[in-house]
Length: 141
Length: 71
Image 1 (cartoon, each protein chain N blue to C red):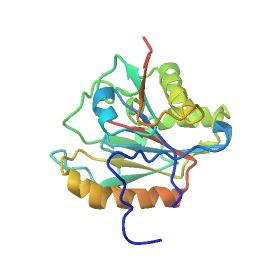
Image 2: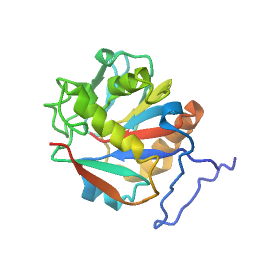
Image 3: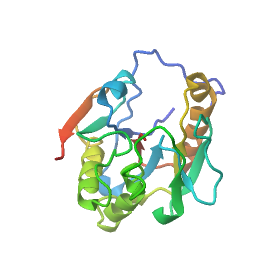
């Protein structure tokens, strides 16, 4: 694969068709809600262009968030409000999806859009590609 | 290059529409931090996720943010 990033027209929508059935799909979560494993390093709530990997086997009780920009009323009681890993596991248990990916990902709060676009997101996308999910479910904060 | 299908759940449909996502669901009436609705309401959260995942199966509507009521 070329090292040159793929450049799309700003008017282009990078739409990838989904093939197959949801019952056979493995789903990966990617969020911008600053979620991380409790044993991982915290996000800088003032601005952070790094991302964290969340193991697919981690109980949601072992996850937390570092944020100062969105309403916390929901997440303080139930992190599934922004990172619905429990719900995906239940859908897998009910055989409505095949399973959850081995890894999920979270970005933090950032307004450094250029760096996000040129380094953070390409690195994150390479990790998602290695996980090879059938589809990615994206959530915000 | 082989892409990976994505679907977005957003509570800021107007902002998200500017990014022209390939697929997006906006559950109406919820604020940032409550993308999946309410805390400890698994059935509502699962309805929203299921509706989002079903956008993977539906006709292509790239760039469109599809709003639904859940209240």
